[in-house]
Image (cartoon, rainbow, N blue to C red):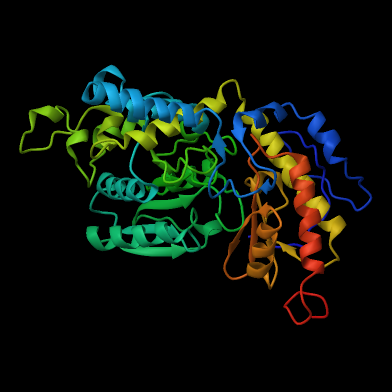
Length: 429
């Protein structure tokens, strides 16, 4: 984890810049001018946005404008009129693979390797158990990032108990080096949910493979925010959610990536009727479906699945590299404005400054973070709080503007200046 006092950085970087320039003499461009020059600015019209500043798309993406009408049609016509005929006539039955193929380009996967359905947690469980089974009996260890999102850790511990393996928690930066001849699989975060730190998926995967281990990559904070290259990086299995940067709505189904070469050996611990080779045969024995469909379990969650499919239409014609370039520009600009607007030492950034180590969020440490975020939200700037002291701001390039970032910093400065005497980090403290 990188923890530094925030410094101004180049607010309009190239997409490949590894380390942004930093200098107190560097002038910060005007937010309105940056918005005027932003090639993605028009995408904002594809979303339903209010008058405030929404910087919590890393928890729940904003509503794409086309979703309400699509859902209304699904309910009124496909469900209300066609009813059960919609499984075939409206394509409900093949929706998990169809929507998966729509997500695939955003995560660097060829068609036929992504299936949509179930929650992130359920898919992590399926992926971990399947990886342990593929690794074989000689490997009795599961590695997990020691600071991972709680669900990932809980599931890894449960899988270890169920499969008779040992769970070892290691720091995220050392997870690749910790793998050895005992390691079956490592559950790896692509981006740290607290700090926004981006890890090198290609290097980690290569090192795990050298040790003979498999990797399950958690994409919850990277899919839709930055380029992901699952096929090129050799990732074995991956899981991501549909409701953050993919904007699929609250509780949107997650997705599961099963690398093509592993699909014949993917032995799911949840062999439901939907993953059967002949689901309507209703046989006593489970025969796995060919291909990625063996990652399915039960009847697809059609309403939320089709909301996600409609939400993915906002990606029509969008280059993920351009999204990444804007993400870095937005976060650079935000950090520069924070340093300009706040007294030195007021907050501390725990988000790496290096472009190749930064996701699409900025996390600032402040001793009264809970109170500060509550007041920010009251004043129309929505981010979120992570215990014990982190202010988390997510930047979704499809709809976040530089003016949003600028307003967020101005309101943050006002909130911090208004903290009552005696409040940690407040006036008179």
